[in-house]
Image (cartoon, rainbow, N blue to C red):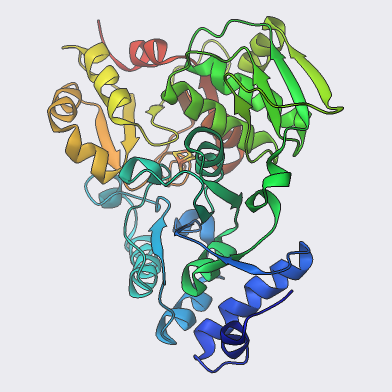
Length: 392
Ligand code: F3S
């Protein structure tokens, strides 16, 4: 891969170890993916922030990088951590709290904003056509497909290195020719609610592998439903973007796929693992983190109902949206549900909190909870989730 003179100097260590190691990570990645050069990025979004999913091993690297003066050169935001300070944080042990706070302190030292959300695009909408290095898979698909920004699906280390260098190798869907559709998906089913959009994503992820589809039949879809589709397609496969709407692209010989109602129904059913007799310990909404319109919708649907005893109800979002939705948040919390920021059920310590059955309207959570939370799942739309959580 070609490096400019300035990049060479960084590679040789003239700007210190932190910059050098990050440049080496990017150069190695570039070689692996046959990139010919690095390109500037406007925004890096880091993952591997939750101590629960990160573990102990990478912390020493973060500390070394931060103490060697590694500093983000571009806007740099972070995925959720493993608890919030108000509610869950009080119930996790001291050692967990200290380790998590140390991880955050290292990122902060390196100039990352404590956004702690998987929906960084609500904080600021990325510019159409801008190149970025984002590591949250649901946000990557949303950025490419809905917002028109350009990012590969980065891992935690490559997003971190890209933040510090301010560049990323020019490969994958940073190149226009690699953003062309390779499959034509005909949606024959009429999708009724958010869980069916999630199910469509989960199903497509398993059959498309990494092929970019054009999805025909997706019209007048809300951004909230598209978000469920984006999160789920990235969960079960390696698709990093899709085309939809009035796409007038000339298609070459592409694979053709037809999605019928039975595919959606079967996928919805497969995302519930708990038996019918089980009640949820936790009703979790907000995967990916809620938008303002979702918070408003939840507040309206709750009305003046109150939480049932023996069940928790968490609604996860970013600090930014929580602040913007203050009135709705107050209404939600009067019911006994919690509007939680900075974390989510998947990356927090549900097992330690005794949560064994999670009910959710998110296909992504329903997919991950059996392994990452060792929990059984009930996959159901918002209305049913709230009915299970609330009296009346
Ligand atoms: Fe976000 Fe957690 Fe879902 S990080 S995408 S709410 S699993």
